[in-house]
Image (cartoon, rainbow, N blue to C red):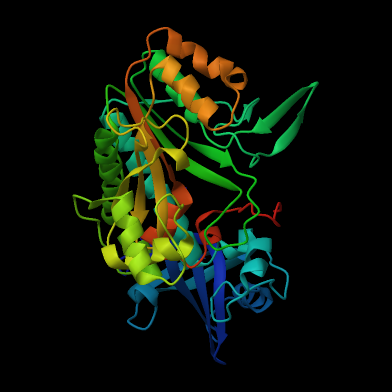
Length: 429
């Protein structure tokens, strides 16, 4: 079994390693080959007057990003990465890379983002890109652990649906035999149906699809949503849970990704409990005082408004108590003030990360809410039926994985947070 480059230490006597040739430097009598695998780097040094002829031939022939297998003696040296180098006894080219490369993996010359995404398999060899996805894996792990440790059931819901979750036209139609069908924009309706099934606490981390014609650095048409629904809970319980989940994700990254954080060179800080909570009315007042655009009560928050409020808040925060008219039909109105609902958005200073609410669990009120949005209850018959047979009070939320990673790592473009992004113009690779 091969050992990783990280396992080769200055105390190792001999080693056989396999990796990519990250960099080549020829200094006449010496040539240096920086090898790379997902654990780190190791320098192989070929002394031309002492190396076996086969080693010299392979070293002369090899190109950057070729996969090689090298065995030899390990020597400590302060000048090499990790304080050690490998003096080859054998040097085998397992898979030679063509030249020129589509982009520079060593990061000395940065390619345009479109070139990088066109050659993502190569771009992902870059240590900084690899670090992003090691961290994303740790985020997923930490969130899963939190849910399992707190009694949630992992579910998988259909991504092919017959009706829009929230109405509207932002759906991708698909050919589905004789029927009209769409790619699902949210597991919302199915999460709520599982409350009727008595599952009580469910979560899903899965793709969602939105046919929004955006060309921005923070929108995707296929994204990963972290979704939660739980019974016998209100909107305050849902905000408490969301806050804990975000903190758990950060904590797991801090615990397991110190090397990746160092590679990215970012200031990493775990958000502090408890996230401030401001009402929608307060948020509108903050935005109106800080930006020139005309914004009033009942308007949705523009990008400029979100940015202005984020600058004022400076930390993760919640916007609560939204006008019922601008939130989905399943958001529970206050009994004594039905024009306001028990909905919330969880915000990072840069952007919205999550939205949620206490849900309407009464059948007749839900029908009334659907009609108030200009939608037909008949289109939601499969969803409404469980509300007739004992639906418990419940609440939940959905959070975008890519936005969480983007804000956590201070990435300039959301496409940096997904391996193979799907936006308005990109469907390959």
